Length: 421
Ligand code: LLP
Image (cartoon, rainbow, N blue to C red; front, side, top):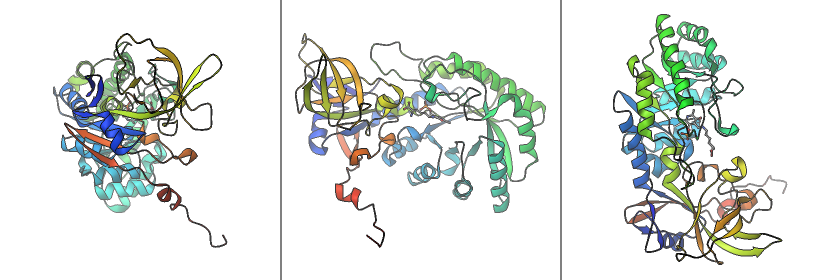
């Protein structure tokens, strides 16, 4: 459920007409709903209320300071994957003890920064990384709390580019080798093993792959405890999918996900961490764009928008589907026509949808891409020197620009010339 609904034929973000925001801020623009963000965070929090837990929002999904602060004030922790994300989380007021650090390539500098600023745990992704964390922590005279990310070799049954739990993926340590890795972790100075981490992929629409992975984690917990390790925390990653179309089968709800976790892992008495990103932010954001031209092609009609692949890369990168809806609803009974919906960037990949049935639209009309809150603005680029588009946060009947659109001068002045030019 989200808070982008029609009232009298006009799309609203909570209590604000989307057209009003577009008029004030210009297009394209990302618009987020505070109520949806909080609702989704709380659904996870409640789904795990059967035991000690922390929901660590995977901020890679949408990392604007205002979004982070909204979630942090509600009690969320953060899952970060870079020094930049760590700095963003801290700047938004997230205490170090609520930040977990994931990612396969943590540098010495990032590890040091996190140890200085406070960290709940590092999720170790490889033995070389484990040794570096040990070295850095020992040289600082501190203890780094760690889990080891295991790769359970489970097929997440999602798009290949966002599956992470098969042995051919670069993530984690093969679960079969976990015992020797934990044994080394226990011997190394500066490390305190506290648990196990697993994350098998993103946009999972079925609970079974999760359950398979979690069963392996349960078994490993018992084995490692038998070996004398203290396993008191299980980080189960993110990945629960969202409905990208109104019509397709709905993925499982956070409540069902939480109940499955209790079933598979509840008996172990561990603190549970999860790292959802998409489910919290995805349907909490839309991308609003204006029609520039309608163009008749041979056997097809193009709808040319002012948003492009640099603003929302998901369709070009993952063949992802985003529902595209008019901001002013068409009159009932109006016949839809198929359009190829494209942006102004100079490549054919700049196509949001092919032969998408839409009610007739005219230049200057506004459309909204639904489910664009996660992996939208954060994956944007300035390709074709198109400015990063602004972000707006709505709360009830108020809205605020939470990232302004840069001017062309702002963009150009970031470059500097060598002295010989
Ligand atoms: N934890 C780890 C270690 C991750 O790698 C990810 C996502 C998450 C949590 C959050 O997963 P989520 O709950 O959002 O599914 N750009 C792609 C998605 C990439 C996901 C990368 N890792 C897309 O637009 O579909």
